[in-house]
Image (tube, rainbow, N blue to C red; front, side):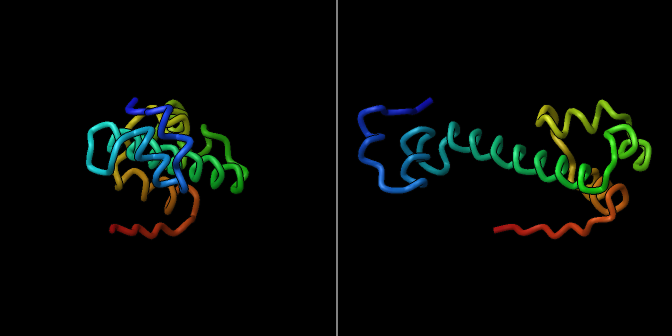
Length: 103
């Protein structure tokens, strides 16, 4: 980590803290952190939506033609997920609409 303990006491907001801990936007370390954070958000959204639908991982997997291990790995952030798979899980498996925002 690019953490600089001396500078942490001087940060004024969350963005500055991320700069101190993981480097500026565009650095390899910061990009890795940001990617992991996005996987975490997706995994938590999936887990919450599945539980809201009162479905087990097995039920969701069966509904979309996958195995429960795949759903488990996504929910734990242990695998990459393609947009097409994400769409299938939320739209067909959980009956939720997906809106992607790039920017």
